[in-house]
Amino acid sequence: MKMVEESDELIRACSDVGRFLEEDYRRAINDSEFSSGELHNSILRRDQMQKTWAPTRIVIVGARSVPLVTARAVSLAGQNKCCQSIHVKCPSLDEELLVRSMWGDNQFLQPPLSTFVFDSGGEAPQEWLDAVEDASHIVVYGSSETVEHFNLNKKPWQKVIGFGSKFSIGIAKIEGLSARAVVDDFVQYYGSGCLSPRRYYLMGSEGQYNDFLDEMGEEYNSREDQLVRYWTKNKMPMLGVRTKNVLQSGYRDIHRSLLEEDFSDDLNGTADVCRVDLTYRLLEGLTGTRGLISTIATNSSSLQYAHDFSSVVRFCQPGEMQSPRIMWTHDGEDELTVTSTRREMSI
Image (cartoon, rainbow, N blue to C red; front, side):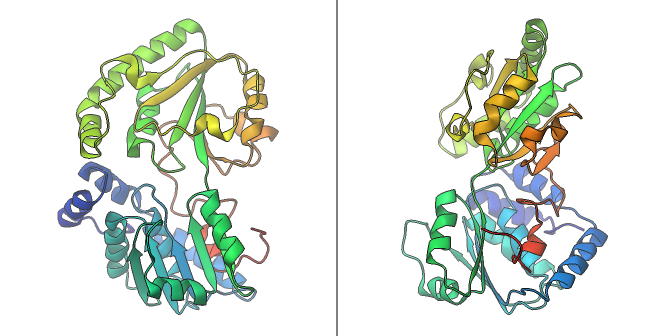
């Protein structure tokens, strides 16, 4: 089953008011498919934990990300039989359309739903402010500053569940690596969201690296129409798909600790790749980002067992960064469990 029923009318409406293309919304809906058994098992696990801290009034603060992120959070919270109400701040009109469509399609969702769309810097509706004041649980997506704001202003009886800023990277051996898979990770959703790679570190010889860049360039050429349409729609400069402007590349000898600001550039669908020689030097360099990495795409089976990456939430194959399972964990827990109990986890 899919989280949202696909329809041409819904996809066109989302594209009319959102920043993504029709094919992006269609892909997001198709990727939202999950098994009823997986959801059923998670609900059973959640129900066993409800004796400790069951939410009754849930507020969800959505953030600008990729399609269906807010809808997914609402869907999982809506499975909670103890919940009396859900109030959602949608980050954009397209996400509100997806939330409303998901809610209307799913007969198993329990409580009343209210949605709001307003700029974070603007004046919030009074109904939203009242909902935040009255909430038992506040689920916050967005920047670390946004999460901190809700933590500082929460009432003694409220639980704030914060999912702050994170980013993703790729670390892969060039031998056997698909250029199409790497370009997929960079192009899909154009660098939006915490699952999009900020950089791919590639291990191999200089000759292998240069050949791989040529393969990536060919892949980018085949996606020129899609990228140009996205850049034009969002009034972005033409970044030059047929030139190496689309590839920020080079060799990096990691000789210092890399920090969060090293990965802060929004790539808008372009690629940042570099060649590295020694994995352990890379591991040392990334110590400054411990706890900030959401996903690592890798074709190295040994990498995910490295102690340096013990805080990473998710590992996947190259090309699969934007396709997590419906119950993938945030900060070690899935959202269905999180919106049921947070007693054991400090914020």
